[in-house]
Picture 1 (cartoon, chains in turn green, blue):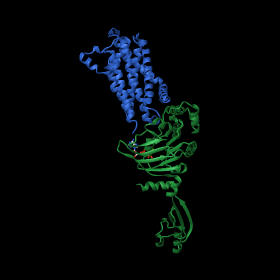
Picture 2 (cartoon, helix red, strand yellow):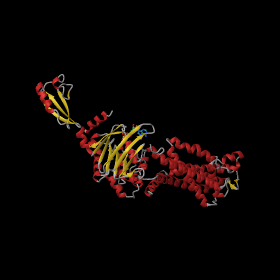
Picture 3 (spheres, helix red, strand yellow):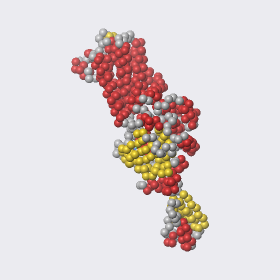
Picture 4 (spheres, chains in turn green, red):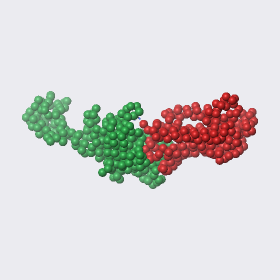
Length: 308
Length: 253
Ligand SMILES: Nc1ncnc2c1ncn2[C@@H]1O[C@H](COP(=O)(O)OP(=O)(O)OP(=O)(O)O)[C@@H](O)[C@H]1O
Ligand SMILES: [Mg+2]
């Protein structure tokens, strides 16, 4: 299937000389939720800005549904909704007026009923006549989302939609995003809450220092890069790992009461049987054992650390 | 052509104006009236006539022009600068609108406002002195043309400025002196010959004289040249705006 967005060899060097993006190649599939993860300053906002026409790329080109974003900017932009990272809103306008304005700006005919539906979906309807400056930060974020959705886009960019948003509202937003996906909208989001990506995304891209280091299905990523750990609670504390066990990837807790064994779930042999046999031979007994699987967060931290 | 967008921008800008109507109408009307009282009445009692026109009536076109220039420039500059300042410009840049449509919306709104203000001031002035308009069509034409030209100019200032000071500086430092020296309150024929020549390099002399001609059929310069100069400045502004959008100057990093 043709990708809905295709980014080819895009790079960006700002006027300051700062290289924000090295050579980026990325395909976004229609209808998926794609999460872009990366530490501060990695280039996420820059990449989104280039696709949406806010930033001129230094090189490369991008197509959206087969249309070049520069040559066919009208077709492309009317398909895209953008929720920016910064809370950039009008101040003196009312919620309804600013949302209706955006619809007009995107060339859609007036449709008060649709504006009402969007505002209701985001629980903004009772605020429709409030001036935006009188709203809380989370409410302003909702207004930005309403503005991005009011022209019925096929693709939605959410640059940290849940930054500074309380738990309740975050759950609400996840539901909104899921509903959009069910309607066939492609969603690209950036977030610093890894659990969010873990919860929502179909695919994940990790970007650091302007380079996309991983793009993968979430499940595959977690299986491939996920490590499992086996924690053994010892019957008697140890001072050090005995020589007989040195060959295993073991770590002794500072208290000396537990051993942690890290293994790769993908490997043919995990090494657990050998470890347990060696322990019996060395006469080390354990009273309890537990396994844990690394979260996307651990994977992410590892990836970013490795690329340093 | 995205007419919906032009309408949205235009309507939005006009609504912004409507909200602050008192301030946006009262202050220029008041200051023009003050000029009128001070210059028209105090000085007018000493200078009886200029080129056969009562002094009070003589200065009306110049005063309207002066207000038109400053209001068009600041209004338009503020409209676009404010969006850059608040960051809401992102919306405009990500929307399926062309440079032409954005300019049409903003400049159209700014020019509409100043034309309305100009007509209000004309009405105010007619309360003080009898005013006769010899060529109403050309009067309107000069009014609209100047409003559009300086709204375009203001748009450029609004894109160029990177602080509120710069936004103020251009009207204060260029427009005010040039209008004062441009024959608002006198005929340049009243100047010594050397200064008459210098004055001919001031573009605003042409605007004021063209406009004044449409009232009283008197002018210090050729009216065709006035019209030509205005159109020339208009074209320069259009080219600069075209370039701004083409390169993304100060709009896109
Ligand atoms: N207009 C600009 N001029 C110069 N450098 C810039 C500009 N905008 C961003 N940068 C730099 O480019 C790099 C990438 O910025 P970007 O905003 O894309 O990061 P990000 O991944 O979105 O980070 P965050 O998670 O903090 O939002 C940063 O080092 C930033 O300082
Ligand atoms: Mg960012």
